[in-house]
Length: 185
Image (tube, rainbow, N blue to C red):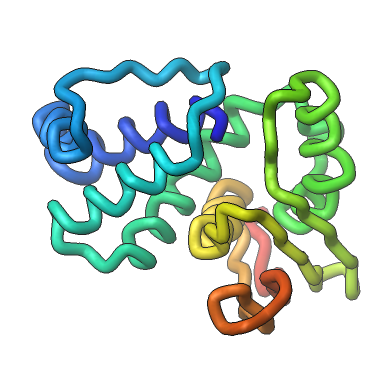
């Protein structure tokens, strides 16, 4: 997993749950007293998942709730961090999501073959509707759901989404139906 996810998880823990002490306690609970995650380096997926599980346990917050909230926190930061990959400044939430898999993730894979972003396929159903298919061995669809909500927040749009298929419920992939309900002017 790309180090940027660790970097922003550290920010998330510090901003939402009590500063550096919380992050340091989390590292200790995860088996290391000190660790620096570099944004451009790759780390094992299990490291971030373990940190999220430990955080959920330490803070007594259900895992899915915390990871979804982290996704919502993460999305605007990722949009700023990866702003060079956003080809059209007029994009809004659905336009961005429609270009993630074949555009943004493809470019990231091409520029850095060591990365492994999830497979995301989209189908535009109408001007205000999109179907997003997510496939990843990480099985972090709850993180993606939070990120979708965070993208809506970033663009000032109210989004309605429902997960119509999920790997955690026997599906072969996760499928989200996303509808843009309103747009900020």
